[in-house]
Length: 386
Image (cartoon, rainbow, N blue to C red):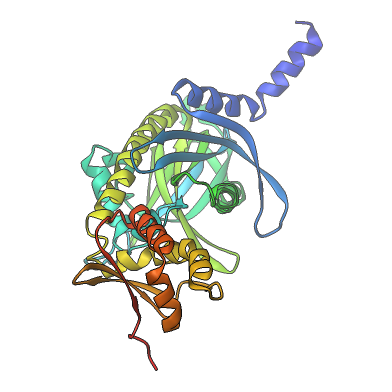
């Protein structure tokens, strides 16, 4: 290379691009599908921004297609130590656990019903821990309550035959805050984007998202305790439960702070998370259907889908207006097996009962949605408030 080429190569090496390339190639080498410089729309400022790296794995199980995604923000901060300020977790009751909601999106009613239960997050991490993902599923030792970057103003060295200690100047939290916020905003955008692109897909999909702040530099924890100076220690990884306001709503997510030397190990762990997700969500669906008809909340969770798919047939063979929404239909047990209860006019219900075509469609749709092939009754719903 000539002098200009050498100079440009050296200059580029001082930017963050070599670090981003390192992250990209490391993820590819471990079998992750990778997309660099992923564009997203900032939900607050409505500006186009860039996520450094998106990695994902895709598996088609017996019940659902599982996608485990990793959003990565890369920061090269040589000579600018990052410090996570921590303190003991606040008091917890017996049902408390420190995890924000697991970042999951699905277009399948069954999965959405299960993951929206208050106890599901604790169950999810407990099961992940039991399957060998202890480090990933575990609580952080302390709560991160602030972020701070420092500038190196003097490195340790010899002076007058002694050792000069390093000195640092506080540089604020803007760089660390920017990285964390970009991850949170990218997560909001990606969940909205996948809803637009895949929400009506015939495939039953589950996406689980993970956020990683990858640092080419030094990371420290400063652990605060009552009436004592903070205890500072160098760390390679630390989990931050970040909270902010987005769109006027409280929003939280787990962010894994990770340094360059620990990145390969983190990706390996996340590969295990994908294997766990594939098994977990398939099992969740199977468990759901084992008791769907005898469990009111599970039974009711599928009523909107049943109503949506029946509405046109009700209009055609019931000679009536097409019903809107799902309030006109309930599913219940009956001595004969399953009862479909309708808040429609009696003549309409009678025409539907007498229609061989409608009853065939009803049995097929119930079998598809509820996995039930037994007898079905079509009855007026007498349980109304007036």
